[in-house]
Amino acid sequence: MVWKHIKTLLREGYGIEAVPSRGYRLTSIPDILRHSDIVQGLGTTIVGIDIRLFSEVASTNTLAMEMAAQGAPDGAVVIAETQTGGKGRLGRTWISPAGNLYMSVILRPEVPASTAPLITLMGAVAVTHAIRRLCGLKAEIKWPNDILISGRKVCGLLTEMSAEQDRIRHIVLGIGVDVNMDLGALPGEVQACATTLAAASGTRIKRTELLRTILRELDQWYQVFTGGTADILKEWERLNMTVGNRVTVRGSVETLEGQATGIDDLGRLLILTDNGILHAVSAGDVSVQKK
Ligand code: BTN
Image (tube, protein in one colour):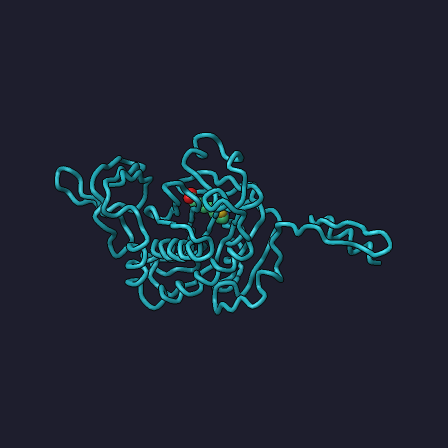
């Protein structure tokens, strides 16, 4: 009977030694996410009211979009240990080995669809706070929603939306945080501009604690967002490292170079080019030349 439980624990990655004529000794705990550990005393009111945890999915965003279309509630969360088809911004792939966090939050805010980009900024604010709080690292936001530590990317966010006219049916806020993985899992060109929380802090990070901190921050900032977007924009500006610097923005149509002077009410990056024209950019890849 006991052996049956021991076998289950061994399969889950627990280290267990038999101690002759005494029983068993627990020697190590695996780094796996467990539903009960995540929800125990979580205390959120919207984000995380329904949590679905998977060992492997194609993409938590794709699954969350399907679940949302079938009526999953505001604040439901999909989490996976690994993804086989993780999606990044601008049609890129998000490499998703074990040891990181991959999650998507289903949101149903009653705001115009034009406000949707601000949900991603809200997500970046929440995750930046969580990283700062839990890891003591100076995480900063690069427009629109990359999170960097010492100039290297540690987290990306990808928002997908279903809308009719200007009404949002649902939004999926996808978050990928590079936590404990071996940076060697990334291709060379990505490795050079990426980091993990473990590499940046010099210590392995407790993923469950990080996940719980992110859920709590998201819960708070989502409520700020639904009360009005001004405070989100203000907080994003405080945590960002793009505004005030010279930037190059590669968009699908053109590349702009100039001074990033701020973001507008819709979260677009304002760039003053050298010919004195102010541009509002809604998508693109930004390189920042820090002062
Ligand atoms: C980016 O390009 O910076 C955005 C990356 C977003 C990755 C996350 S991982 C969880 C969720 N599921 C996905 O397929 N993508 C997002």
